[in-house]
Amino acid sequence: MDLFLSTLSFTLNVTAPVFILVFLGLFFARIGLVNDEFNRVASRLVFNVTLPTLVFLTLLNTDLTQVFALDLLLYAGLVTLMGFAVLVWRARLIPANEDKGVFVQGGFRGNLGILGLALAGNQYGDAGLALTSILLALLIIIYNLLSVVALNLWRDTQEGQGVNWRRILIDIVKNPLIIAVVLAIPTSLFELPLPDLALKVGNYFASMTLPLALLCIGAALDLKALRATSSLALKATAYKLLLLPIPMVLGAWLLGYEGMTLGVLFLVFSCPTAAASYVMARAMGGNAVLAANIVALTTLFGTLTISIGVFALHWFGLS
Image (cartoon, rainbow, N blue to C red):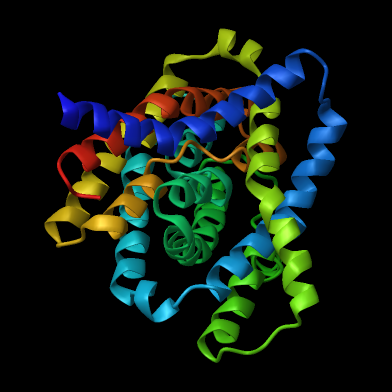
């Protein structure tokens, strides 16, 4: 009984603060304390400034030789591609073309930049943040490329309106999170000195990142859209939270990963669908309502599935 209570307490300490902030954001939006304009500006600030600063400082203050592992990056990239292939195979059974790409994207594209970092930081501190940041650098590229592919596989386009791969490449190169990782890795490895003033200001920015970002996620949730939720949104949610993360984590365990590494992989693979998937689906002619429903459902149900997963890993002494 004592083991159960201690494991439950550990689980709640990891997941509860994160999801409480998400639901506080939803509550603040409902009572009018925050509005769409605030959410839009705050989200841009987080994505372009505070989150890259957090990633940069986290990597800067961590011994990367202890957390960087090429085999881990290869595994994360490979299973993500395999999961994408499974979703594409499943999507061929969906009648409407505008739903297929949205279903695929909703099933694999996790919200690593906010929820993944927040959960890893809560559970493992700076080391967890550093490892998640490295995985994030790789998966941001993969997610963006695969999302464009998914939304174009069944897209009805007119002649001359194909995928603009040059623009996609430019967007990837200009991504603030990727830039932060690229700058932080040599700075950390070569121990390049930075002015104390810059570090102090950077820490101010970094400390506001996760609370502000989590509030924005909650404020962006549209529970009214759930009234229109179809069985397809529920199926995509099942793939995102259960059907893909479980074999991914099991495979990592069979390969010998354990402790913080296995725990971070679980948090990365089981994150709810990124809100950016809705924006991309709307811009590329997909079913935006379906995309919004998947984001909302995975965020709501992710509270339960991630808590259960963290509890199970801790109970069996695997994380």
